[in-house]
Amino acid sequence: MSATSPKVEGLTWGSVRVEGFGSFRDAKLWPGGARGWDWDETGTSHAPGVQIQDVDEIVEEGARYVILSKGQNERLQVKPQTIEWLQEHGVEVQVLESNNAVERYNDLARQGEPVGALIHSTC
Image (cartoon, rainbow, N blue to C red; front, side, top):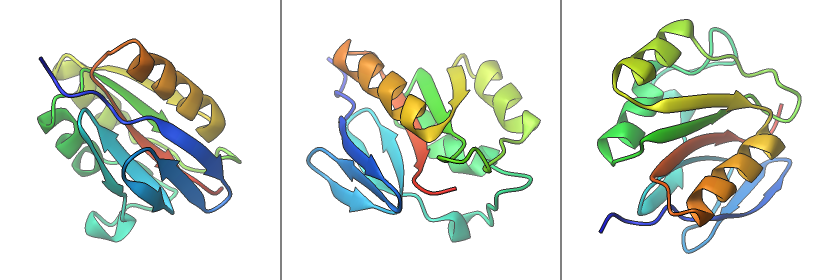
């Protein structure tokens, strides 16, 4: 049996609260785990946006679905290469506004799907 993806309990400007893991400014989630998503680790910025290096850990941890949030004002972009890389690895990916991303992520997690996400809490 695979690990369950933790639920997002709340999203406010500047904070993502994850069941069993606490609160983060931005969150990286996967089946069985969560941690803060520190953009400085990979040099991520709003443009050109989410990179392969931001999602590879989620896939390595077993996510077959990945939800990428664009921020509450949809300013965070996603590099086309990131989407292609996920698809090449057999991962279904959706890019959504952050509140919608949390809703979709939680729906998949409740269904027991191996879902991961990157949640950006601000713009």
